[in-house]
Image 1 (cartoon, rainbow, N blue to C red):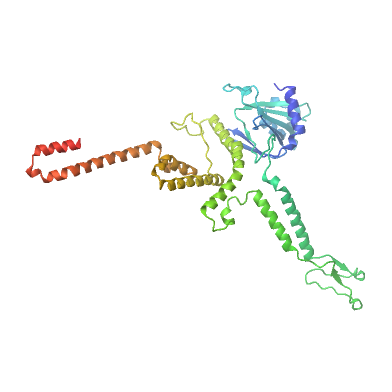
Image 2 (spheres, rainbow, N blue to C red):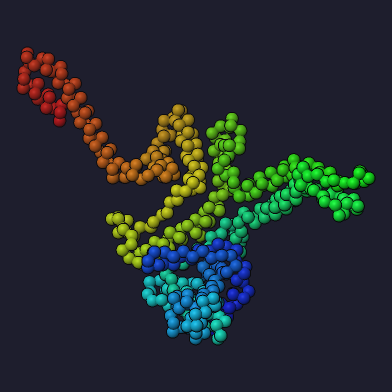
Length: 439
């Protein structure tokens, strides 16, 4: 039931905290026609809260619906009379304020069925419709239906901040300098002027190549600039370049261009070290985005497809019940993996150096797993790599062929000298020796 506690909680969030949101939230709902329905929420129209693990699990958003939208989304019997009357009077421009709260269900128990016992509650209430706050819909979700990724966050803080906040001061300074630069440019091109008082009613032409005539008796009269323009563009441009470079660094603009920005005489080891250092700065951010956004989006979409039924292909044999690991192959993900390749290559190179002194150190390296790991980091297509069964079959065939070739070579080496003497020797004795050699 929708009790007074629910109303106090929802309206309290709406009044005090709704405007404090700074994250970009994406709502993911099922759709019978398209499969998914993605709704991005703008900053300022929602409020977030997190659990004791620091995971965002509560979303409150404010929505404004027209009468037609209200009837399309909600059950007519649950709506206030004012909404129905507005629809019947065709008040198409009227808006009704609706609050939507999505939060964990405290009554949820894993494995139980039914909307009231789903993992997340989905509550809609309407306010300001000519009556008190009224519940118009109560539903549920089996998985969290939204993502609220954070670039970085401080301990205890629900909302994070992006590089834009760090670069905000430089961006404002850059804007002010650029605005002043344009003003200065206008003044240099068309500076303010002083005009003699006796020319107040004369026609003055300030256009390019303009000519202004003055009386001969007032030859000293005329138009002159208030100040002489000074060229300060070089200093201004230098300051602008420094600010722009500072903003680029804050936004990791140079993350993938260390080679172009460094001395070309640098060795491959030095370049790999620079790449590793730069990726080390961005790795925590990427991992947080993968955890809070990308992983959950894939999981939520798969859950929706499975619930719709007959949408995705059947699970391949042998994969049923196994946990699915998502592997990202974007440019950023591959750049992260390249730093791991440098570590592998450094280890193999060191092992090769040691093997020059003692070959037994190569027994430490599992060559099969080493090559598989290298290919996985490079995101090599799995069709280009043999499975464990195929590798075992190929090696078994190779071993059998080698045994056969060894046996044939051994038989040939043993029988060759005997055949040369077969004409003058005991045939039975020679045959027995050949049989014994084969066995």
